Image 1 (cartoon, rainbow, N blue to C red):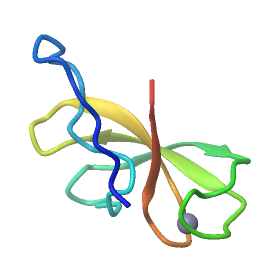
Image 2 (image 1 turned 180 degrees about the horizontal axis):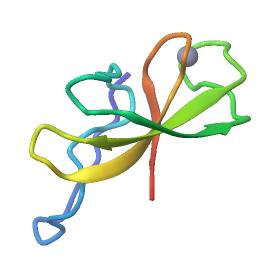
Image 3 (image 1 turned 90 degrees about the vertical axis):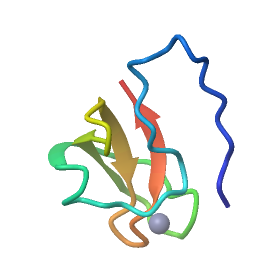
Length: 77
Ligand SMILES: [Zn+2]
């Protein structure tokens, strides 16, 4: 279920988290951002939750995670 995302090398600010990854709240220092009334791509949940995160390399970004299956549904800015 992992989608390959090609990231240009010069784009150093991109986080390395990708859609379909399991949510690692503690590793990513997740902080609640907002809720989305969007269906999960991976299960039947009708809501996903956005968090501000930092990946393992310290790059900050925002991810929308399903509270049910805990998979990353989207990366947003
Ligand atoms: Zn889900």
